[in-house]
Image (cartoon, rainbow over all chains, first blue to last red; front, side, top):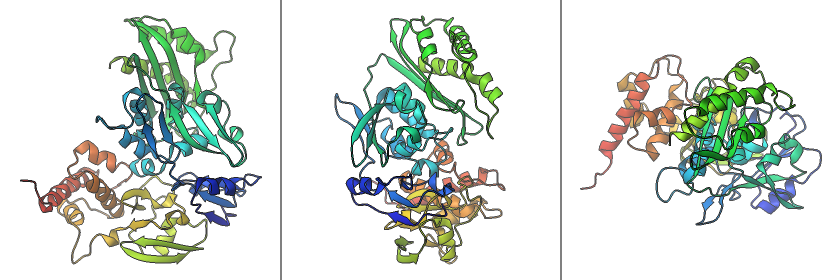
Length: 297
Length: 159
């Protein structure tokens, strides 16, 4: 950022939002800055540090939704989901957020990456969005002019750069609690445990008797934007949990991949970590694996 | 702009540019234990502790540590009086070329301050951001275990 001239340390969220409310994309928010420090964007002239504005909370009041502040780091989330009675992040939401937070990168990166940064500064290898999509999270956005709440499905329909309005930041993400009939799993495929992802998948479903219900399947890392596979979700809803399930999931996922029901085939990405062909080859296998792991609980 | 922070317990004020990377500032100010390995957050040779947690200083803009407390290896021990972690690494044979070691030591410190008796998986998780081209990691993990034992012996025990 060769044109960076000012670095602000606001003492309140209101002050931060006022500083961010400048047109032209020249003023950006920064938390621990693991992404911005490597940026060569010549447009950025000012940064506003939002690390110490109290947005790092993780709360789960009895009976209410779970709220995670945008400045909560991956490590904060992992620690909040530790297996003990008083942990703020419990149950399936805690499990999936913890799995996706652990996937974010190495220890030093987990200490730095924030939930808000991971979803707003969206990169193809951002690991947490699929968990938000599969859990049906709501994303809270705020600017000096307005506050709004947007579903994760809408938020990730385009790159957040095109969703966020001038001076707007994410302040928190909320999750509706799920009852004990829900199961889920997050899987990351990468060359190493801390490497950038080749494919992320997060599945969540409920079991009604022995049938799949309320199925959510989210993928990222293999396609341009994180997304729910709504056609596949419909195709496997109502399917019975028996030895035929893996075969059905693979068959349906392969059909969606190839472009079923008049839809275009999925477009897989190529990058330094993997080819589009490899991502295409593993697609339905990883999704099936996620269902199998979830059902093993 | 002025940057006010604490390094190894000492209050410091530096003159920095808003886009200065913390790694370069620290080395410019004489903290040579903070190594420039990859400059893109992969190798961990630039690891420092900020308020007790490990971070890669090549990914941090200097102004972000305004008012914070940083620890480098210079603040842990000296040749005359090494820190138990440093002693353990030497005794375990965990040091070959030495380039990754400051980062390894600080990641170990952050781990043991929080979890004095980690198992091997916890050690690997805590050090998964520190690469070593020389040792194959076996002796480093042994060094962490030895340090954990050494520090455990020096802590008061409940009767």
